[in-house]
Image 1 (cartoon, helix red, strand yellow):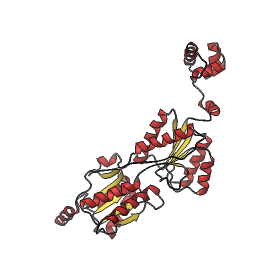
Image 2 (cartoon, helix red, strand yellow):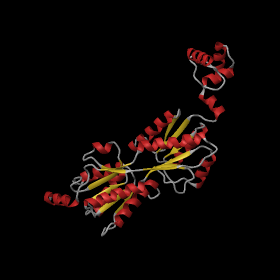
Image 3 (cartoon, helix red, strand yellow):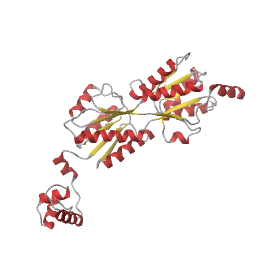
Image 4 (cartoon, one colour):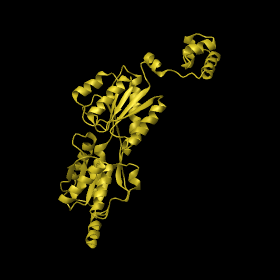
Length: 345
C-alpha cells in the first residue's frame, strides 16, 4: 500500500503536523528535522495525495483547455503554450475537444467543474447564451475565452489583434497593385473571423478608387476554403487576389486553384492568417498574418493562475496580442500575373 503521512511520522519519530509542515516547507520546522522527514518520505516512496490536499487548500492545481479540434495545427501550438505555462505554475492541463459542438462543449465544462478544476480556457465554438454565461459565472471558477474580443464579456479574454491583421492583409495587397480582391471567411457570429473581415474591408474601402471587395462566408476549414474558392472563381473570374480568414482555408483555396489550372502567385495571389508551420512548406510558401499562438496559450494560463490565487478579486482581464505580416512567395503584382496567364492561353 502507498505510504501515508502517518507512516512517515511513525518512522521519523515526529508528529503528523510536523511531517506536513516539513513536506510543504511550512513554518516552525528546523533544518535537520525537515531533511530527516524528507529522507524518510523518499525512502518510503511517499507521493502526496493531491486530491486530499485540494480539499484543504481549495485548489486542484489542474486547468482545463477546451478547443475545437487539437488536430488543427493552430490549437496544437496554443495547447503547447498553455501546457508549458501550466507546468511552470505547478499545474496539470486537461485537454478537451468540442468538435465544434456547442452541447459537447458545455458537457466538458460541467465535467471539469465536477473535477474541481482551478480554471478553464475555452475556444468557444459559438457565442455563449445568457444561461451558459450565468452557469459559468456562478461556478466561481475563473474562465478565459480564447479568440474572443473583450467587448460584452464578463469573462477574461485572450486574442490576437484580428482587426489589425485584416487591415495588414488589405494594405499589402493594395500595395502590390491588386484591385479585384476577395475575402473568404467563416460565419458572422465567429468573433475573431468577423474582426479580421471588418479590418480587411475597412482598409480596402479607405483606399482611393478601390472597388467593393467580394466577401464570401462558409466553413473555415480546408474543405470550406476550397468550396468557397470554386464558387468565387465561377462568379468572379476577374479576381486577382484572395485573403483567406485562416491558413487552413488558404490551403483549400490553393488546392481549388490548382484544380482549375491556375498558378499561385502568377494568376492568383493568396494571403492567409495564423502563420502555421505548414505555411512554410507548402508550395509556394504562404504569405500570411502571424498571430502568436504559443504566447496566447501561455497568456491564458497566466491569467487563470492569477485569478486562482486571488479568488477574492475575480476582475476580468483582457489581453490582445499583436500581429505581423509574414511575406513569402504566394503574392505578386497582378499585371505580370495577367500577362503570363494570357501568354499561356
